[in-house]
Image (tube, rainbow, N blue to C red):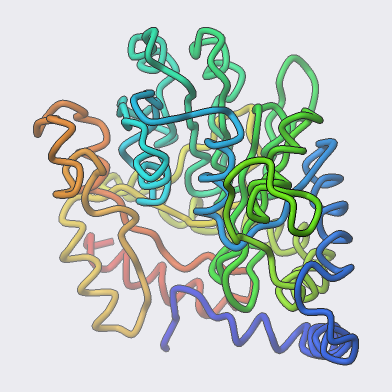
Amino acid sequence: MAVPLLDLKAQHATIREDVVAALMAVVDSQTFILGEPVSELEREVAALSQTRHAVGCANGTDALLIALRALGVKPGDEVVTTPFTFFATAGAIHNVGARPVFVDIDPRTFNIDPAAVSAAVTTRTKAVIAVDLFGQMAAIEAVTAAAGGCPVIEDAAQSIGASRTIEGKTVMAGEAAAIGTFSFFPSKNLGGYGDGGMAVTQDDELFDLLMKLRTHGGRKTYFHEIVGYNSRLDTLQAAVLRAKLPHLAGWSAARRRNAAHYDTAFADVGDIVTPYIDPANTSIYNQYTIRVPRRDALQEQLKAQGIGANVYYPLSLHQQPCFDYLGYREGQFPEAERAAHEVLSLPIYPELTPAQLDEVIGVVRAFFGR
């Protein structure tokens, strides 16, 4: 039985009528740039994130870029972040002219280690980017404390709708940072039919800057207060995302059920370390990522049986050739490097059938002789 890593066709089949109707409404309106669906989606994502403001932009990478610019990060500044994440996190830092400063991760959650953040902050540090990896929030309150007064960006590209309990209060992904950023890449839990991104904030002044930065540095046509970007969320993408948003909570709950099924099935396999979810967190399981010995061989075995599995991420950012100029060396961030050699993500999407789940489980267990 073939089991893809992600089956977007299965998802589309359940919402096709709603999505097509939303798309045709935009086509009939002929308002393709910053149409009303963009403003409506911004209001809805702000409500979901428990923030005052949301600003749609072209993609999740641009959300990070305009967030850094809004916080005043400039050439010569340093931004502390994790080396175990998608390239965009550090790439955005580089592309505003700042220097990425990497610190190691918590080996259980894969998220940035707040103690390491504290040790890395200097007078040159302008911001910290904490990534919510694989669907669970970083310890945002600890990272904020460790940042020593520097603003924190929460890269929540993989965690829209995730939450964390902080001092008895439910805090949503993006809520507690100076700026939170989301990606609507099609593989995300809330994915568009193309690229899209969003930044959220509680701060009125940051909101104004974000709005200017996404549209060439001005909020009034042909008047430019700063030099910004052409980074607008397409109205068509906003329409798709609005049609999908009411399903997000149910899809995330289905991912948690699938994760629980895997956890139970692998509990007696000593070679498998199942995902650790911080007790304060409610994860949305953008990925279900295990640690295993002989990772590459297991991936090949799954592939041979028609089962999708992927490695997020096979090479830590401090080891990427483009960042050689930073001067990091192998072994400097041992937890990130160890994770890069051991992690493997299994299918977790909501539409998985019980038979498909059992197929994945059977192949993995057989690989370890169970």
